Length: 346
Image (tube, rainbow, N blue to C red; front, side, top):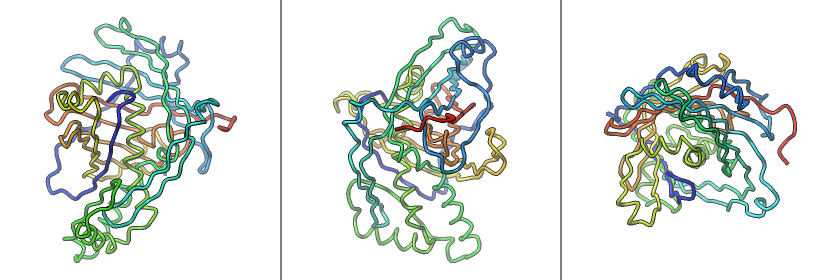
């Protein structure tokens, strides 16, 4: 994926008896050789400090990601700082359009037009065990983000799934309920709606939960759009994603992207991610489809997109690989996060 590509997305949640083998999270730590360069670039590398619940985004809210790629015996790392940087006067003339998404349960969710915000992206790397900092660069870029989507996050989805699993465990009549939640830009066929609505009504899915299901793929699109505009990270994505280049060429360079959220949906210890013990953290699977072909398998660690983690939609960890197991193994983890002390975004 690259900047400027058109993304047509949908998301599917489904119960699978045999989901694909997902990449595991692996421990990551800064390579010692990175320390001088990160200090010079003023990139914070340790400690996640969450703002009080309800805090709005502010200029200079920042998140630092460690991005690691392992390909055979070659290990490379980048430091990526995502920093809120409000839109300028000219950019504010072009708000994002209002959007309506339909769910396979028969309901629809409306998202209003927003001005969004700017995101400064500061990348330092790559560094490697073999070459040290010989290939490292210090690059700034940026992206426009829609904070209403990033602010929805993804954590409500696995929380809802685990709630439904608990209901099924206590009521045997729920055990055989099959469900599928999809979102799209047009209404779904009546027979598909009837089947899904019956199952979802049994599980008492709320309007807020449905909004989270609808907003999930939009948060993912913003997150991957940031990644695709990040020097170094976009190169890893091109290496890692199994892209059908012929189809891209014949479609004028336009990507047809779909996201599938899948099992396992699990709770994850907050301490594993450097977060306070009371923080709810979940892990789940993600399959990225390009032109209806599996292109990337991921395992996500997600939490509430509470400032400053709104910058990354509450995604605090991501392990990714190609479905065929070839190519690099990518791990991305939030290592530091800090809210600005003042200066609310205008």
